[in-house]
Length: 368
Image (cartoon, rainbow, N blue to C red; front, top):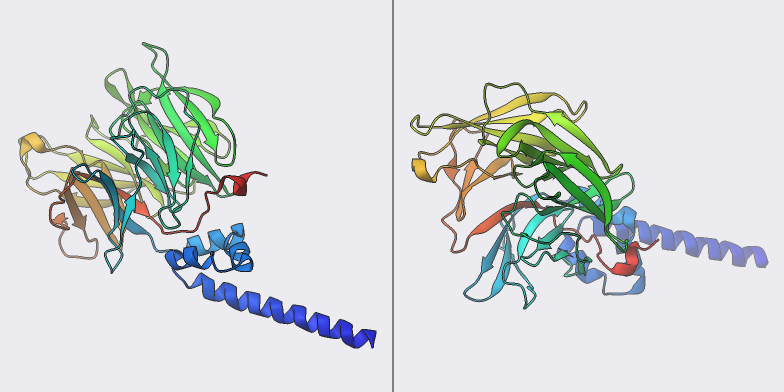
């Protein structure tokens, strides 16, 4: 009699495991926005959809999209539009009443790293609506969307499944060093990790667990890229590929999961100008491969500057040339020219790669 009861219990457990496996497969095929609602159905669904293994498995299946972030100062609101969404879905982001200049530092795994003029830092998952305000960093002066001396970068360590925010800020007055502190999501305080020679020439770029930034010595651009490995929290130096000159006509970007160097050639009088895209080898982290040669549009010479934002989406390369203009290059077309991707925006915006995810931001979730 006891054997039959035990057999029935085992059969029930097998059935529950089978249902769980089937449910997991169904959840893996649903978009993140739908899963965010499914988490509210019951405790068992919440447990499954909060499991780290499932969260990152679903994240890896996600489609990389293009996100445009803008501040609508007339209506006192901040908007984030996902271009890849067929329905034209638009998020409206909340903005603290004391802040008048909310901006996005960067995006990682569906999380937005937000900043404002007071130096405050907040993480937001616009898909789930969860947010996390970080403690005030060590150095807050001069924080802005365009600052190259005081900026933050959100990154992810694949081996430890940890998200970290790196904060770069100036050293002592007259110093040629950039200082850095790190906050691990789930931790309690910022940690100083040291400094490195060469101040940032522009805001950095996070790619595959490493933050990169171009350097300058005083006001002159140098020939190296400073690197910070977020897992080991160690600095390194990467040299730019040999070239006749770079000047200020180069910037870093991330395309197809690789660090890229955008280099503009030509003189102010020598139109049209071109842009070359070189990709860093993901294996040895030292070799560069020339990937694209793009003709830039005929712009007014006085308005021309090196593109600061280039993202890969839907098999195309999207480049922001002005505060309200977005251009697109299709590598599969017969043309090597950038074309206008959409009408000029009503508001100035910034561009970011974005994957909708259910990565949680509840404070207690991360505490070991």
